[in-house]
Length: 150
Length: 150
Image (cartoon, rainbow over all chains, first blue to last red; front, side, top):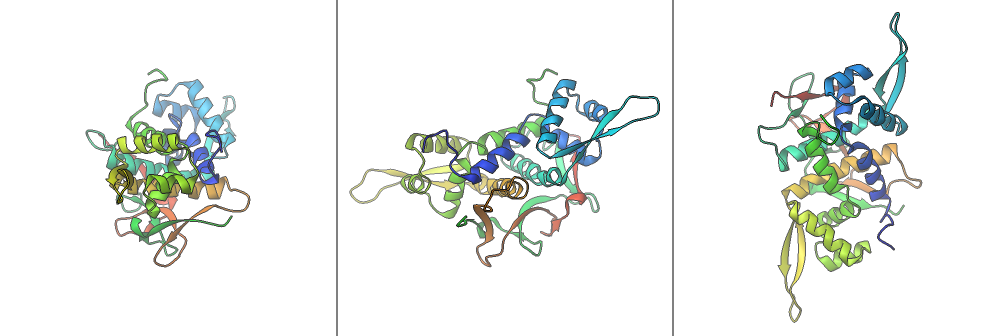
């Protein structure tokens, strides 16, 4: 095996997710979409991101099936677009949460985290954890990564 | 703001984690370490990875505080090294689990996943989820990403 080959599909699918979600601005864009800020102009205004960059990121996310582009039109205006998270996009929030949690704990910023994950029903701070089929958190030392026969 | 600046520390800490953990081979190496395969030669044999690559990856992980290098010596042999996950390394398994889960669901491989996450006590398949302070899984639509004043 040469060093340019992928070792196996685990790394392959991880690399794909990492390449997609690790792009600069992409986590912030996904957070805005999840918060309900879905119109191009609103996202741009909230983040202070250049038009061409936001266009590029949203196109990449749409091509990856993470966001869905939908036209809308206000009276007297031209057609504009809003962007909605797909199921894949919503599921990616778990990855973002895990990355933030790790950064907060192990590469902390002076002044504390800028983003917190909270239960919008109770306000409780949330973790990202392994959970069993009953939805209960499982400690890390009980987690096994098992290679299947596939 | 120019396009080369980081938008904010959220992306900054995510980028750092992504850059570190997204490197080719790194997820597989972390999995081996977590499974208890901690000696250089054993990791190399299990993964079929080139010596120089494994050396480089482990050095990066050690510099990032994710693994700890420990010497050991068997009778009549020279000093060799084994590598242990630190707390930061163990916590990174949540990120790997989240990435795998996303890949399995949204970029699935023909033949099914090659790695499963299981509870080693019960054998149950595990998810990665947001959890509340009582350790109960929280549905995605209840999760808010809140910008702090910091």
